[in-house]
Length: 218
Image (tube, rainbow, N blue to C red; front, top):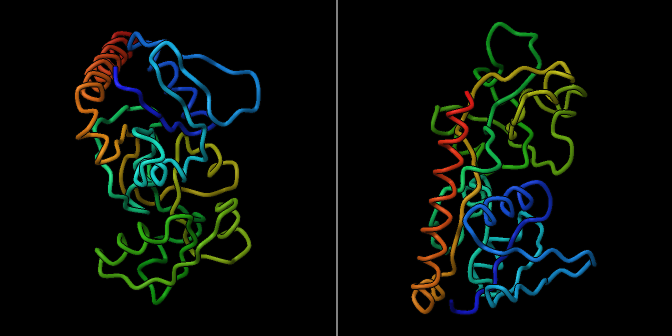
């Protein structure tokens, strides 16, 4: 295998990817220290542990050859990378959410405010419906916005819906499903194609086997 540098998001998605990586038959070396770059001698590579929103940037600019990133990140901040594989981990939905106090969403009225971490995705969605809204960018607990009167609606990721329900909110609309994707630097894809294609084939097999296993448990 050609030497590779892999960017992986910290947290839950990174942990899910490690399980998938091992299921594909590859060795993963964990480091108990606080190192942000961890050597992987079994496959002559390195792992960068990055903030989820930064992974695609590292890959685009060649600081990493390959990476794992949520589809939401790629839609909100388009990058010049190759999207190679839907890993089907980190599954959730991008939704329009609000208080259940109206018979119809207030987005149908004049210039409602919509708070979100994803202003580009939200603006494109409402524009496609012919609706004009005032987008309010936020970075923290988006569910707070309708509770304090900052926004009429929010656009955010929903996994189980528990946070929305616990705060008295309801999902009005699902924009799209979101999962994590395996991406690649464009130059690396040309120069290290054999190695990267091999990784994709093995990961694809692991994804398919997990899906088959999940279907069998239903």
